[in-house]
Length: 148
Picture 1 (cartoon, rainbow, N blue to C red):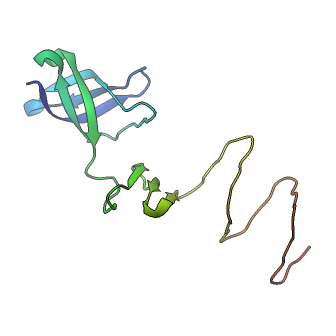
Picture 2: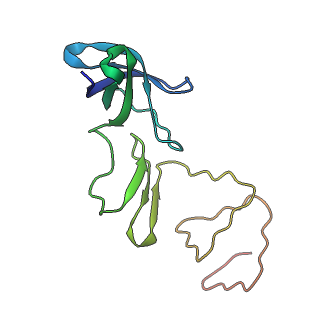
Picture 3: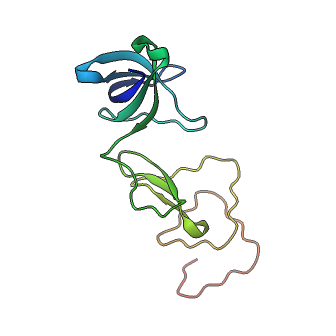
């Protein structure tokens, strides 16, 4: 009774430490179970996510969730050493081999910073829209037709 699997049925993400409602042994329902996450990482798992339930001192009323995973979502077929952060809608950030980072989002990527520095070459596959002033230092090379 000290450790087991559970299915999350609800999450309260408004508490200082997330609280979960879950089902465990043979339909046993537990409420307000704290769900511990790694510092610096935060998620709100969807209903049906599985978790590892630890009952501290073997007391069911003193239980915590220490890990969660969901078989319906996630990144598969990663090479050894790779990792990813993902959501249930297919958005992800992958840290890949050879120093590559892959980011995928279906709608919008927002970078909110007073300054942004990109070191290296930049390729833009679609239209570039600049809403504000543009300052160019260096050489402007136009290789195809351009309208000014």
